[in-house]
Image (cartoon, rainbow, N blue to C red):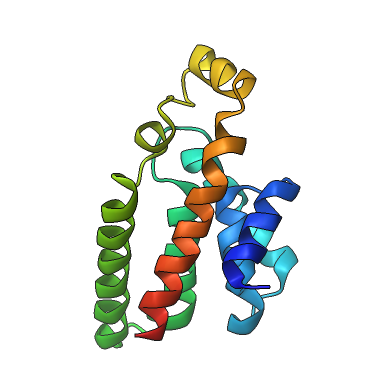
Length: 146
């Protein structure tokens, strides 16, 4: 099973998009799945359904940070590499999907109770988000392997 397949299966089982993306990479980066799911929980639904950054994008950014992020104050090279890779991820994901925000990607503002209700009734997340999770993992793997 590919990481993209694993992440999509995780999302379809009930985890959020951010949890699905982060947990599909977590163990190889030294973080157990339970901790990954806990850390990523609040980032789902455009950061707790506030209409911000897509959780799949947030999960990918966490993976980049875990792999390359700065751990010492004097490690500016790590910070710059992390920022460059996050910027590349955002460019590539935006090229593929047109945006990195939930309202743009889903066509609904999940922070608005009426729009959230309508989106839920129409199963918008179940229909659209698996593809966004898959895209995030594919773009992320390409960036990490370059």
